[in-house]
Image (cartoon, rainbow, N blue to C red):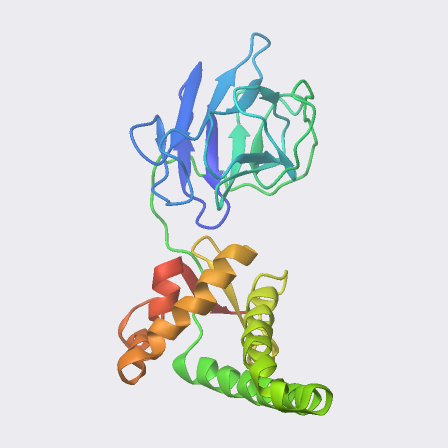
Length: 270
């Protein structure tokens, strides 16, 4: 029986044959995540007993092995293929077929020829549990308040030194107008430092690296630059009203701050 298996939690979804729609609501397979469209994609069985995947005009796209699918075009799947629906990564397993049949998991893909068949084979390790729609806890170890606070202090020190150098350069080069130039440049620099480092493969600023922690989405995957940007600006909300948005991490199981909750991220130990 073909199944989809969430890469992070190993939750298993049984695929309905011959056609199975995947989406946020009212589909054969429902994954309640904001990054997934209501009717996101479809897996269909082919005449030879394999499977193919089609994007149904989703907002955030459907991907196979790093290549984006054109909507309403079917792409063959192969055992071990990696797929992505929105921010969700999944493994697609078919125990009724041999190693030459089609299967997949979710990852990103670039636009390719609409007639191209993607059939990259990867030896992906898959959980063999076939209980459908079973919710299991992930094995994340969440970063504590003290770890995050010290990481913030380290990053603050780095940015303060960089800001001082930038201020000196602006005054040296532009004299009185340097002050006016310094403000937007410093805001831009802090934003890029935060968003670029957090959305990198390591998922961490220098301070977070020093503390052995990183930022990921709820599935444990690296977040996009856009989400990292949203997280940075949402952090200003956490600082309002005596930093209560930061302190609420002491009161929830995932140790999320307000800005983590807004953009659906968590900070975990590496």
